[in-house]
Image (cartoon, rainbow, N blue to C red; front, side):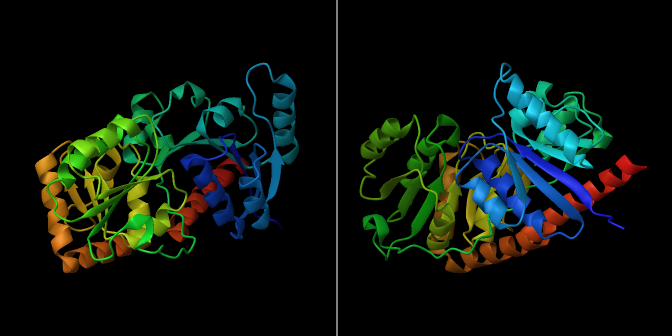
Length: 349
């Protein structure tokens, strides 16, 4: 007797992105679970599809086009009907909006504060933060059918990069920040704080509309010798393995996935009390938390960790233990599997 759950994970998505990367990680994480037989429905993608296939999961590709792409929508719905899954798990607006109700439990995973019009027809909802769960409930979704399951980090082993990279002195404290160069990320506040942290060098990984303004501010503050603009990077984990401290100065940081990345990679974190980091970090235990846009508090926290290797080690050790206990791939993927098993049983009864 086959008691496996038949699961479809469905995402349209862009070629790259946080949700797209997590989708791939989750499909691969559940590939070895004896409870689950799954297929991945997604757009053609030269990176995502081969990774999923290498994990032993069958992939069906669709265009997930706009309203007028009627033929593709028909093929997508027929594929769902033919497979007759117990559970369909969708990611982001396009796949969620195009997936109809059916003889399965429809679960929509929300990784941002999306417009809920794409998700109202679902049976259940997963929010990756408590804030997103509150957004769903306040938007009218029944609280008993909203569940909080966070993300896990990319646990692929990586090697630190050479500390002397980017013309960086090897005998100076090394700080790292990463993200889109956008006003919400408050890298301007980070620069003002860095001016009060003698000798420290900052690697800033990212690109975006504020690049020129940040470069100008860097010059005005006399920081050109201590800031390296790295551009957009796909190796932030390796950068974290190298740096002494990761700094997240955001004015708005809804998810806090970068916090888990820093925990897993053993890089002690300083973050502002924005939505995601403020929810995740226990100040003084798994990182340091400062008020949003408080230059003095941020510089004090940076100086504190720069001067104390012992405190950096204590924070990174406690954070890694916390991650392993609550947020690891093993823990989170099993939470998904258990949740899907419960839904499949409900669907069959």
